[in-house]
Image (cartoon, rainbow, N blue to C red; front, side, top):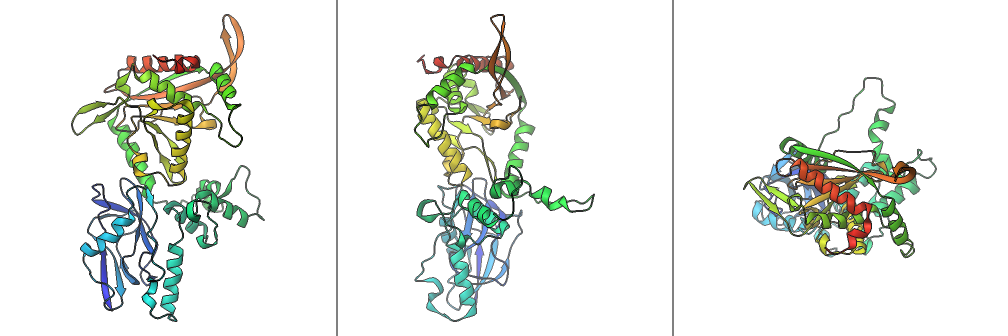
Length: 444
């Protein structure tokens, strides 16, 4: 027997450390080569790290929430004599680095070769049986978020039918399985599967506890990253907030007219693609709002192209997938791409490049939009536009009271680089486009 010391590999893109999100194994467990042993979070993505060799786990380093530098000892595995060729980081770095899958924010584990698994030894051995079972679990194709949700719900993913490419399990598959399993128990009003269950977990955990009881939830993974970036944005950026009321009656009429022609089963148009095209038009006059602030160089970088960030709520927290080159897209193309990148973010299928590089962000709470909001700027951008709920209410039009569909736009600007006058003028120009939607489609 020999010990294989596996060190945290270089996961690419300048990563110097990673945060441990969840261990899949513990000391004493048997693992097989390519079985996922730990999930880590870098500044760019969640990554599943597979075992480089088969054997028994002797020790692990770090707990969920701890940060481990690249090259530091991560896990020690006891292997058969000769099975582990190296105990250094050099040879152990290659395989996990491939598992980082640079093109995906949450990379699936590399599948092992069934013919090579176990190397044909100790077929009747209990440890081999346990290893084979663990390897089978690891080979289930899905994302880290789905694996974590399944673990929390006590679901064996081998029992879940996947509807994604090549049988990959997507969030809706897990939700459907959990819903079927829980059918005899009525859901709470408004609950929809596992997502709703998770949303009420803190309340449920303390429901039967005595008064004064508390619950501690460690802030790790994507939630920690969100907290860090939001804190930095509010601390470093002086926000100038501006809210304007819009009469979207004509826009609603156009939207409904166009949706009549949408093929059966296709998603209907929302206000967001109209807002996106209007922004493209308005930003020609206000290029200072379609920019990044490079703090290290002390430079404002104005962009000719408009790369729209679409703030998207996911089971793991808020993500901002990007629609590239919105200025070159039609209304329908923009709507399709907005849906595609948002769904990719929700299902952890978005590529890394689809989760960065936006030049201005749109955010919307949909039906929960409320009257107004004060969105936080998605640094290094200098502006963000928020859509609030549209409602019908009385308004004076040409001296008479009429029922109009009204909606507020909430916006925030980096006051260091966008003056209040310019911010207000931009929103006023945006208002004019949306209140007279035909102007959105007229070439300048």
